[in-house]
Image (cartoon, rainbow, N blue to C red; front, side, top):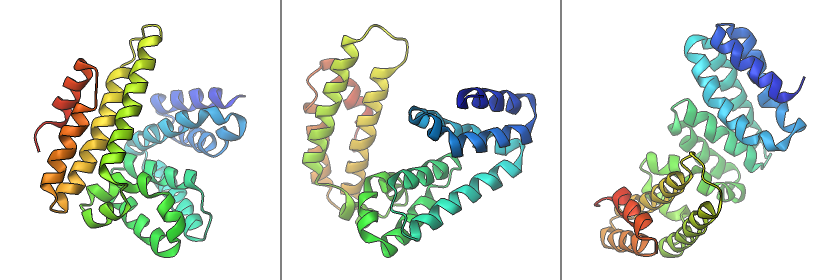
Length: 227
């Protein structure tokens, strides 16, 4: 039985109300699928959302998911230094609606292993900003202007690549713009939160003007809105 077959069986069990069977399937896939095929990483992240959904009907599922999260946190605090494990913690916390836990864990990790924590800073940044610790965010965030310029370059590159591919109903273009807007808004929030309102206004204008495509630039401007 392949990992994908196990995933499908677990998903069907979840929707059929066979909750414990679904939990066993989710647990196996989460812990073993990448050994079969590393390309299943995205599906493994998607699984966490389904797992949290299962937990609404079957509380034991949340207990198991939280236990997995705690084991990963202990491993990192013990010196495991694996960014993929930190990603796992961030995704689990996000699906459980507890980004505050990510923020608190990041601070503990920074105290125990500052060099490794610095490597995870951008992964933790959304939780840090959501916690309104703008001083910590400013310390960890790269310089605003070069960062926004690089993000704009990546957006233009990705939009150009989408245009070269066959038409797809998937909202790829919109997703790329939303990602760019989200990253820029986070930078603006940190600047404003540290009393740098003028710099935030300047970076906002730059983030819009860097986009060459009129339609994309219009969508970015709408997404950024007013400060």
